[in-house]
Length: 452
Image 1 (tube, one colour):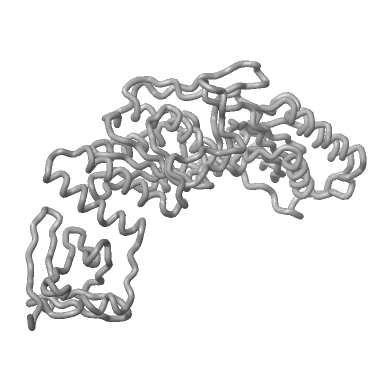
Image 2 (image 1 turned 180 degrees about the vertical axis):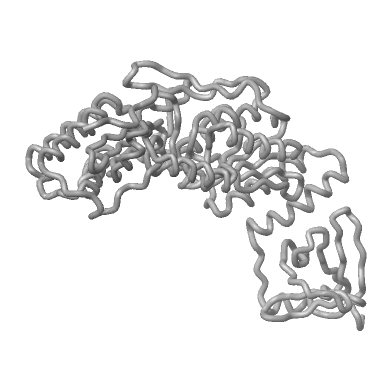
């Protein structure tokens, strides 16, 4: 048996849920590997338990896991397992039953190609190149950057990548939103990644280097401090309020980022409680010639240095708990309300108020009955309001038809026309007598209802 992918130093890195960081290979499918005998099962158990015993971040659970796995082997509970993949899966299940850890994983892998081994590589160079191409194609996890209504910057990134290309993508994204009035960072689909990217992005959010978090490394009996980057290219985002969106899928490095900004009072967290993966992880691969067995083992515990609390098993609890699919609108609305409250310039207030009306209508949609919709119908000079397919429609002269969506009392969004809205005016008897067109720059015009 040979050992490959041995720890290259215990560097603090949070890895996403999935295959081992050092191999990136796909686990072998059941039935695809040669059968194993009792001696091989014992060798696998010896290898796995040695790593758990010496490296796993929590000493007492490590002792229980090792004791139980060795007991089960000696008692013959694994005698029926001849498939390496099924045996690895059973070992994983037993370890998780004793002590659940979202970062922990045991898996079987196919053997490396002999030419790869002969060249001294730990993985196939073609796989490495394909992985690089894939990461580039998905822009290193930076999926979407835009300026929302009201000048609020929005950035969705689904991975904390590492390497110069990933840092360049991050810098471009952060600089794109640097002029925003507020910033929303969407981590609802982010399963983790590299601690180096945490430090890099945090460098944009603080005026100077900031102590973020501590990591206790049991195997080395030491504590590692993590700090934000002291230099980042471009503009920092230090004055604007920051929001972080979370879900139950927000995990590992994405949780640390959220945890850091929450504890340092740099961000408002909106969404669901995160997944609860507060350990840093590394991988070890054991080569049994005809197959390999890998283990992803957590080796460091993250915690707030001020109170010794972390998020392992409990997740990061948001300031504003809402279902994840509502988090963006809720955060956007909260940012606009605060910007509006703080703004003294009347023209700027119009911009924030206009955007806020629309966002709040998505947070709390208004539903109208057919009877309620019918009262708005009629012809108002060149403008016509009518019902079609169960909803209200608007048309000016022979122009296109637009759906009218209620966003306030007698106030409607007009299709996708972000600059224009429609409201209705009444006489003293409560009868609709006019329609009013509202424009995002504060202008308005009116048309009386025909026949009045």
